Structure formats: C-alpha cells, structure tokens
Image 1 (cartoon, rainbow, N blue to C red):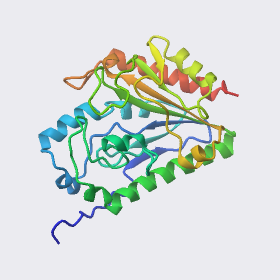
Image 2 (image 1 turned 45 degrees about the vertical axis):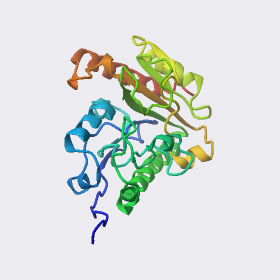
Image 3 (image 1 turned 60 degrees about the vertical axis):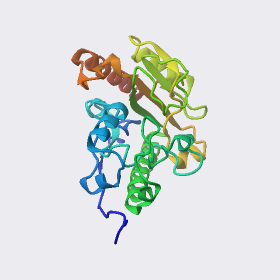
Length: 271
C-alpha cells in the first residue's frame, strides 16, 4: 500500500550489562551510534550524504566505546542512531525539544530542516523500541535500588565546540565538561565527585545543555535515592571534529577520569 510505514523488527538493539550485584553505578550512552536500519532509510527526506553529515554533527562520537571500557559498573548502550529514536526524550508534551522537531522521534535535523515526515514517526515499532529501552533501564535501576538502596546514573554525552542552529541554549558558555544536573536527582556531593575526577577539564553546570536522564518512574516520584548526572564532553577535548578521528591521549584521559569517578562512587562517597 502506498505510503505504508515500513515494518521492521528492531528487537532489543541495545546492550545492557547488569553489574548491580557489585555496583550502584549505571553508565548510560544513548547517542553514540550512527546505525539506521536499512528498512527505515527510505523514510527520511534528506539524501544519504546529507544524513551522514547530520550524523557527523549530532552523534556523540566514541561515547559507546568510552562506556564499554569502564569496569565495575552496570551500563546501557543504545545501538540505534538518535535519528531513529531518541531514548532520552520525554515521550509527550513535556519535552522542550519538540519546539525544534526533536522529541523522541525527530522530524527535524541540526539545521532545523525537515528530515522526516510526522507520519513516519508514528510507526509502532519505534515506540516499541522506546518502551523496551525505557523498561530495561527502569528494571535495572530498580534492581540496583533493591541491592544497594541507591542508584547513581552517569549519563555520557558529547557536544560540538560551536553551537548548532537547533540548540535552545546556544548563547550559554561551552565548557570542556558541562555537568548536567537536576534539582532532585543531582546532589552537590555528586557534582563534587565529577569535578574531582575530571579536574583537568574546565567545567560548568547546566551550561548549553541542561539536566540529566532519570527513568520516568523515579523522575515522576521524585525518588532521590536515584541520583543522576550528565557528562557533556566537548568534543575537541578528545577528537578531531571535522575528520571524526579520535585523539588517543584525550580519550585515555577521559577513560581514566570516568573510571576514577565510578570507583569513588562504588566506595560509597554519596552516602
């Protein structure tokens, strides 16, 4: 039928590592993948080359690798591009990024250009993936709470040196490390641990990108046993933004700092 939405079994295109038996820490990499299933590529209005350029600008490059390299913590890594499903957005009108066509299912790109018709964002398999991902994260947090009485989410992102047109807070400072914090779920102690672990980077709090991810069950309940902090790492600190090539020394420094943060949190510094 003309105009029919493509059917595809996305299954569970994410990687979950459950180390809740040994750690209260959960690492999260939601935007590090470039993967768009072949069956969905025809739903985009831009050319293949234009979509690759969008991925260069919007993917949180190498954050999946960073999270997977860290020991003694649980983790959840998204295997789909954010241009398919953005697993961190509110699935309803609470999402501020709807103003620029970037809710859970994007219709616009980094330049505010239309990249997908609204009809293609209503494909039920996209919502099924969103729900499966959210459920997996929620269940992991609950298991962690049951074991440790607390859960600490480290939400790992990156962002470009220069602001992109879609950004809502482009007038704000762009520190080497923007620490995204929530009034309920990010304590001053947690922020202090981040600053200590990443002491070689200049930091700011909620500058250019704001807040941090908490599964809806715990966010809506204002359950402060669930702590969360977003790490927005400015890309020039660890990669060449034009060639998308990694700076090995910069990446190693991030690994060391993130592992230090996890080790400190495992030792119960937030109790």
